[in-house]
Length: 182
Image (cartoon, rainbow, N blue to C red):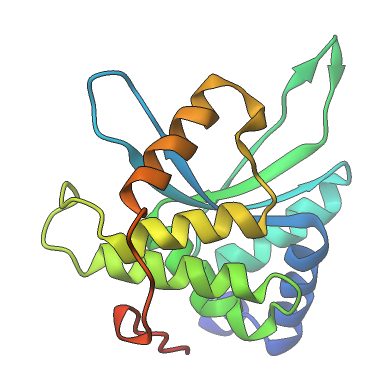
């Protein structure tokens, strides 16, 4: 029988995982552009490390918090690259942020922006609701904070061009965001 106390995460677990995300993690918002379709923005929190025990501990803490995730690793030039633990999707990322935002320090601004974006999207009646200017601004600001530029290839340059054209005359105001932190 499942013991609820064993499933709960402690503040020590949260602080430890928040530190791991600050040091070994990535908090990001990605844009998928496909010809003939509208851009798709999707949130991701990822921890990358060669130590499987560390990633397993991260995964166990997240599971006890009710947050799912998955592992992956890629081969490059015949060598296994570092392993990744990822949390993708609006609800999963929101659950992870809800548990961890107070314990993330270095990447707190990224966490706050992603929190705002995810909650804005989850309030929409349908997934296909067009992105708002504040949502695009969150995407652009997160790219800037993560130091992602258009130099990664033609697709990234297309994304940069697209977002810049959307935000050309937009200036964010405090009323555009809830900024209600947990």
